[in-house]
Length: 315
Image 1 (cartoon, rainbow, N blue to C red):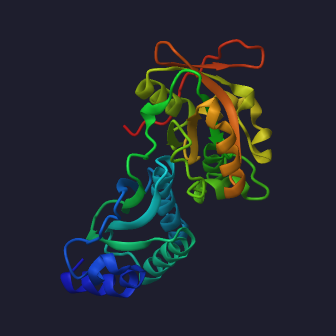
Image 2 (tube, rainbow, N blue to C red):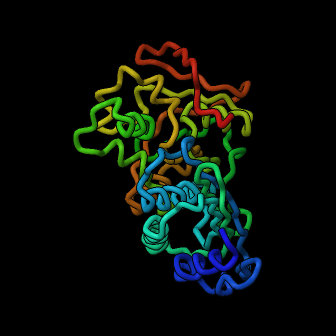
């Protein structure tokens, strides 16, 4: 994009989304004061056309999903959102209508999740559309929930339902029927669980972006525990229930953006009360034990299941 065009684009579409930290998008960085007694949490995720979204995807939904997958990272660490930086790599053929829809999508979710744009970068590309968000959040000092906090005896929980993202992509591609559009909706617009404040309750947590089994393996390694999960306890949506025969695949599919967490038994009641207040469904699916870091998934007979692919690989 030409320099003048870039500044006009920023002023027209993205300056209205900013908060005071962005300094009117007139400088090279945002400036903010971290509150006393709080830690700042920073995460970033990108979405690439053909890899993370289909060509011709609705720009508004794309923007909202981009923001939500980053919000999900904050939710997993028990942090509340503060603001975000946006990077866009766009072909010169991109239209004003596309940009307006993209900005409108961001504006809608900014209001829902109470955060503002603080800055970013735009550039042209001959390749696919690339959009990236770097998000910042805050949590009480020393209270960020990490992957390495699970302990033997902890209970394993997940929020929401698992497998909808995988099935939603299949629905969007026309590979399976999706009469009410629910599954495709879950793929295009996940629900980050930021209302569920895990700080002080969860021992360990992470979001389920690349498949539940793979995320369990990450958590087991980080915390040096053995995790056992009962496959039949993993919650499925009513729309996913008709695909229960594909359960091993649903357990390893990505794009759910639910939370996986562990909680000591003494704090289980606090988790259930917090979940009730937040309106976030939670389900106990397993437990942690001392032992070699590994994950065992039990079928309905109590036998260990063999799962060929445990999750999505980015390379």
